Amino acid sequence: MASEKHFKYVILGGGVAAGYAAREFGKQGVQPGELAIISKESVAPYERPALSKGYLFPQNAARLPGFHTCVGGGGEKLLPEWYTEKGIELILSTEIVKADLASKTLTSAAGATFTYETLLIATGSSTIKLIDFGVQGAESNNILYLREIDDADKLVAAMQAKKDGKAVVVGGGYIGLELSAALKINNFDVTMVYPEPWCMPRLFTAGIAHFYEGYYASKGINIVKGTVASGFDADANGDVSVVKLKDGRVLDADIVIVGVGGRPLTGLFKGQVEEEKGGLKTDTFFETSVAGVYAIGDVATFPMKLYDELRRVEHVDHARKSAEQAVKAIKAKESGESVAEYDYLPYFYSRSFDVAWQFYGDNVGETVLFGDNDPAAAKPKFGTYWVKDGKVIGVFLEGGSADENQAIAKVARAQPPVADVEALGKEGLDFATKI
Image (cartoon, rainbow, N blue to C red):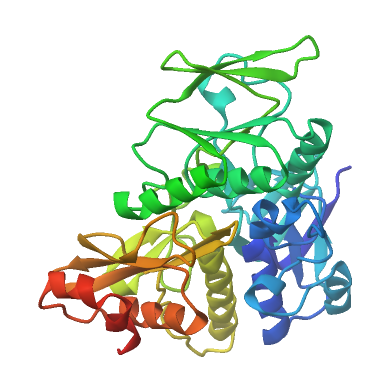
């Protein structure tokens, strides 16, 4: 007979949002045995961004338990012992294959059932795989993806096995840029391949991308734009050896890393809860259309107060903050109190080699480039304002100090008016720092 366990609260998923939700439950007060985290991963929640950065360093690489949540947000590191002390049950290496929201029951692949009173869906995203599109040879060894710590371990093992070899990175977004840098630092010969006219097109303008593409080229990274990987050849061991491009070119490869986006993991809840924009629709407290069921992080489509519209955000900052908001709301509801509406300012950042950028706000409207975006600059510092309806609503800054980054965040939140766009370009960063 498969086991059945009951909890007052269940967090489904074991990523960043789960860790920050657990910490908030700890702060708000939770009785031993009331809360469980069910995760298909084999480790306690950790800060995922480390996987594409510190985890891949050639020296002094980050390893668990060093980056368990909540160190990334400046909080304490929640080791497995912390959960034990709080009486929070970590149910690891457990994949839930069925969720019945009507009967408040979750069923695992092994046939165990878990019932709850309140559910927090923190399932995150899965990587889009080339095998899903039937790309020829996509099942070859050493064609890798990065989402979870197991993926990172596979990548580290491949990097050791194919030391100083040739790496092809498919995709020019976040993962593509960060992993290309990591591979180069590990002395790989790196080629990036992406179909768009420039890297990171969902955020970067041509002017911003001009800097990073030039900077990466100066580090010895080859960039192939305007085409996609259409197939792979493998050697006698089944290891990938060649990447075939749609434009007819052929690249030698010992390792291929694919970063072509993710999909929110909402399949378990299809037809049981309202959906919108690819996610589970929630209110400002992250409660879904089903009472007592909350969705946080990548899977939530929530009202973004600043822009008065429903949005879904895939970023660690929102994963942390939405988790805290949902738990505060759950606890406030129990005690008949209320919490403030979620008022999120979109924030993205990245760092690679010696460069680091931050972006706040919304990247729509007219763009104004300021500073020097010459890739050869000794100390690069430049940015971009997005201006819509006569107001600055988004700001990007490379090479900013902590104070300057705070200043651009304030601008994106305040949305100051701009009379003269040309003057704004000349004034540059000063416009932000004096607000």
